[in-house]
Amino acid sequence: MTRTRKPVGRIAFVGAGPGDPGLLTRRALDALVDADQVVYDRGVPESLLEHVRAQARSDAEFSPAEGVPGDVAKVLISAARAGQNAVHLVAGDPFGHDSVVKEVQAVARTAAHFEVVPGIGQAEGVATYAGVPLPGVRTAADVEDVSTLDFDALAAAVARGSLALAVDAGDLAAVRDGLLAAGVDGTTGVGVTGDGTGETQYTTTSTVDSFVAAALGFTGRVVLTLGEGVGQRDKLSWWENRPLYGWKVLVPRTKEQAGAMSARLRAYGAIPCEVPTIAVEPPRTPAQMERAVKGLVDGRYAWVIFTSVNAVRAVWEKFAEHGLDARHFGGVKIACIGEATADAVRAFGIQPELIPSGEQSSEGLLAEFSPHDEILDPVGRVLLPRADIATETLAAGLTERGWEVDDVTAYRTVRAAPPPAEIRDAIKSGGFDAVLFTSSSTVRNLVGIAGKPHARTVVAVIGPKTAETATEFGLRVDVQPQHASVPDLVEALAAYAVELREKLAAMPAKQRRGSKVQGPTALRFR
Image (cartoon, rainbow, N blue to C red):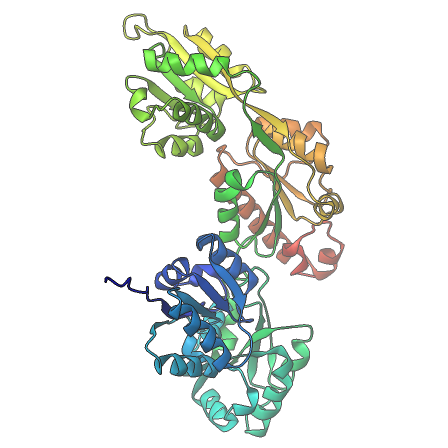
């Protein structure tokens, strides 16, 4: 009789680092993606948990760690014995927590397979994000219980070099009293950082005597830095000094379309809020697209011109319906209006023949599109699969160049449902520092479903057509890149923020207070 071997699960104690999801190690992410059950500590930020959930398996269970170390260990061991992979996700580094060390000891006494995945310590990681170096002899610790601290040793560490402690905000007074009692000079520089490595990280600098009052209002875990490194923060602070740090930026695009833009905004420190203004639906009658796909296979077209990612998606979905793939584009040349559209084509294994090197628009594409030549181009027809509301500029220009154009409705764009009431109120009341428009339709639809952005909101548009529409709706256009692309639009907004900061810094204090400029950049100088 053959016995079925019971599957063996694994246990991983994973360090989440100081909070920024980008600081998760590759090994940590691998363990989380492979997990059946994830138990997480309260110190792990919600933003990091959202990132992990998005990467994890759809059936993975997430639950907060509850009870004493022995209770958590029992949960992990039980899951492993049931053949599951279990992870205990902790802030910072696993061995920076006495409670986790006890859990590892409990698991080690069993036959369960386990591993410990290190993470960047919360104290050291946040100190770096706050721009406070820890030179010389450094001491960094993630403190769970202040009563266990050896303040004499900490005072010696401050005297020799630098100190960084991750503690609960409610324990700051006890830390101050302990340091002063151990002989630390009350004028020693101190930095206190809340929401370390997060979107709203904020650091206040003061002294040992005054840091408790300076950190009034801080909650949760904070990082305390002491020593000579605190004095270098003005020159080395980078996380909080990014051009768009703290700016709430409205991105009127769907999550699929806004991914690259939001990622770039976050890199500059902004907090993007994606609000769909357009919903994409199939054409009312599929006959046009059916004929177009048959024409592609039969060699009816010399070129296919894609003007949007949605058009690429619509054609490939129709291909899939008929069991076709990229091979059926053989002999057909492809032009794309811009890099984002070209990337969508490349994702299907095809390299476009033409992408405008200058302005990425209908005009830019026409400027580089060759006229039809009856000898060089025996097939003189172009397929133009587009939205139902597309302008006639491109089709008319191609016709003028001697091409026959099949202008086909590949998809319909309809106005999306209005966003939640709190988003609409924020749009109209100035709750967003900037809004980025990538097309005329995003302007029209945002105003239609949510109202006009407040006058204090910085308006950035991708190109001249979008600028015209924004002006028609009574919006003041503040930012427009020279090159019409999403990366250039974000770069232009970041450059505008830097210019704004420089102008405000040059103003006398009285003028700053009277300035009409709003947003985080202005508030830093008031």
